[in-house]
Image 1 (tube, rainbow, N blue to C red):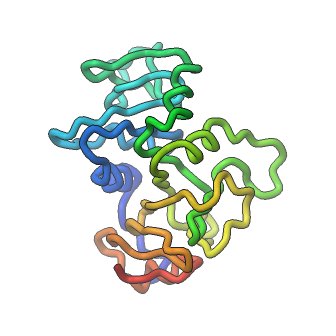
Image 2: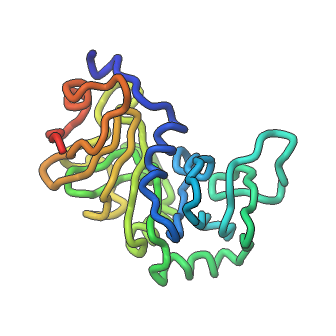
Amino acid sequence: MSATTAKGWDRQQMADRLAQEFQDGWIVNLGVGIPTLCSNTDIGDRDIIYHAENGVIGYGPVLPAGQEDLHLVNAGGQNVSLNPGAAIIHHADSFAIIRSGRIDVTVMGAYEVAANGDFANWKIGGARGGGIGGAMDLAACAKRVFIILEHNTRKGEPRLLRDCALPVTARGVVTLVATNLGLFAPTGDGFAVRELAPGVTFAAAQAATGALTEHP
């Protein structure tokens, strides 16, 4: 199996696998894109409080069409449900939760992740503008940073690299990365495999990665 034919997990499965790393009692911030799918995951009897930077605290799964409250959205603008004990708070209060260090883990998307834990998620090369949003606050203040992204670009180029080529959001903060090919941990020199997705070989993951991929 080559790097181009290894498919592995779909986006919801990527989110499901990463959500299994959440511990009971954690406050979990979910960023825009694939990370929002983590709130759809069945986490059993663990008590997880999902935090959105727009001020929805304690929300649940994304609701299907016809069941949604159009006034209730997560950070990605998706209509979500509220779990018992949820709260709607001011945007400034939501950021006070972030900046005071109460977020146990933030889950963000990215364009690139480096072997030393750097990540880039706010600006594509050559593009004008770009807004870093709350990512810098979250990366600086959350106790842990997890990243979810597709393992390769649409052109087949690796997103897990020895060094980020794009403008970096934060340096040395990423501890865990979920992609369609598996679960990986930056080691400084490369990425260690925590788990490979079904049907993905170590050779395929290594060929698709821009830095040395190590066995656990």
